[in-house]
Image 1 (cartoon, helix red, strand yellow):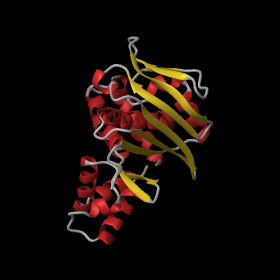
Image 2: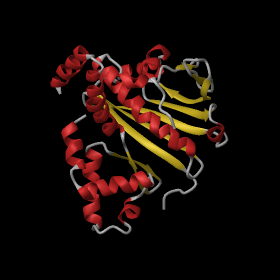
Image 3: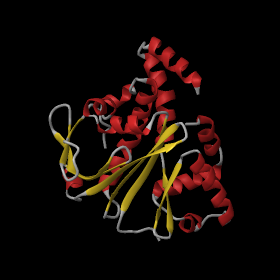
Image 4: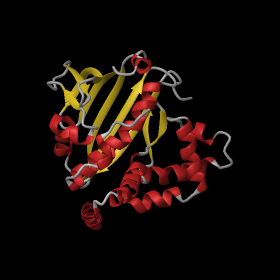
Length: 155
Length: 107
């Protein structure tokens, strides 16, 4: 049986780039803005440091802590929603980003999970991640982000 | 990624059925996916391998179990590439469309 006390998803994308460049794309706030709905990711990127994701209008979307950071391979974030009360009350989720070289491309795996069955947070982020990852891929491979990525999806 | 592999993987009702099942409940083992299906375990294994190869299904090992997840990133890429492309052309961004279409030819 699947662990019923958990909600999770695993997203994988292959991007024509190097692990180093992909790492930079995932950890450089100015660059992140281009593919992450224009949001600003604030942190000093040290293990144990806090981070926050801020909407273009200044509202705080999510906050958390850098749990693990191993350049250019693995980043683990503790993740808590701050802008939707029903998601906030579910508590901390965990987001793991892993980069592996795969021939002439880099494989990016994003795992997001929470110790709660039927999580609304996991439902919500699972709508956002594919858009973010498609835009990141397009941006790295062509130099232009997807036009639809300027706005946060509803729901 | 390879769009052809994605379209080929989707061009099969059994594989779409597996994706539907994962969409309903993400993170299932092979045994769970087989339950109640009119397919042999062997057939499900084969279809899953095609879906994994097309990157429509991702998986992770947890202890002795292997859990499968629907991976909608390639579908989203195709949607963005085709659908938003046509939307943009309606908006008159033809030069950008042309650039994108030509850029894709290196695949």
